[in-house]
Length: 135
Length: 246
Length: 117
Image (tube, rainbow over all chains, first blue to last red; front, side, top):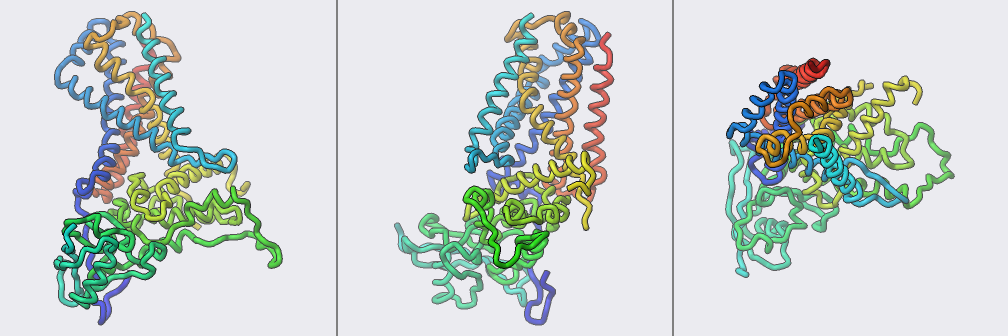
């Protein structure tokens, strides 16, 4: 760094505000994307609670279902689902940036990487739903 | 379209200012003018003490980076009429210390750039009469990252660099990748040692703004993520094979 | 000569967790958090769910589902605390809270899934 001299007494260093992430829509989207991780953790907690309730027996599980129907819990889970979907979409869209796949010397277009991810997402989700619901 | 526009320009004289302030100047609004033309008009006709960097005025030298209405831009490539009716706020590039008016201290970037060893490193030099041949595909592998003009707009856009001055930053890492991917280079391992550190590539959280503001479409964010993947594969290899086996 | 950071290991966990969270958590939360409790779909019933849970493949699947996303959260949250709140000077505490939390969650999952009564 430049040290103060007779002709250059000092420089001005602006300190980045704690609210730097509010100064642009791009920064805000970034922080929301990172914030989705909290809802990912919440979804894991709900899953752990579900396993615990299943182990506890039919009454415990029925109580757990009731808890899920509580309006506050429901609202949190709706918001969580939206954030987790936001995570999935941003994740699949960013994946091509991290992988420079070249075929025959030319770089593959982004959709060649993100497309299959979306297809896999649909197929896997359908498979899980089928296993759970087919009764 | 009106024929005048107001610019609010940062003024800072370290000899007698505690911190920067804004001064307003009214300049002609000519349809082909860029912000740099407006700044030169101010210096020529309104206030000769206004200090700013510029050189080629055509987007290849990387000297004229500043913050225009909050966004990092090359002032020679930013049309004034896009901001009509104004006012247009012109500030020095963010995340760098301000030396005077619109001029920032860029020495930190130069230190970081040198860390990346942005030159061809050879373990074994070829004799002078033998060329290093390269196919178009081999050129294509790194060409995008070679377009960097060192304008530092990516550093101005990067919140991680703003928060942690130790972070290497987008351009330095993209330029390291430019050489890593060059078929003539043999220095990838040397650069990896220096950059696969927390204040090297691992500080990056893929905000992606560096790529958005880059005037030469270098995509430094992509370069960094690709580098992370390479570094990870090297790390796995070093677990499975002893280090000396490379 | 600098020693290369071990950050790649944490980044691998973060990436794997990101993929698992993206592919599986939406359908899980949609089914078990909304559709089934609210009766939008006919549920499989307690006995069937328990039978699915008992299967060893399900238990391994659920261990992965509960563990990797937590490591994804840990890594992302750690950097959010560094950058969003600028409290990097507390980084030892942050690391313990984040990665320790993920290890703890994995432990809880392993304990719950070890044997189903």
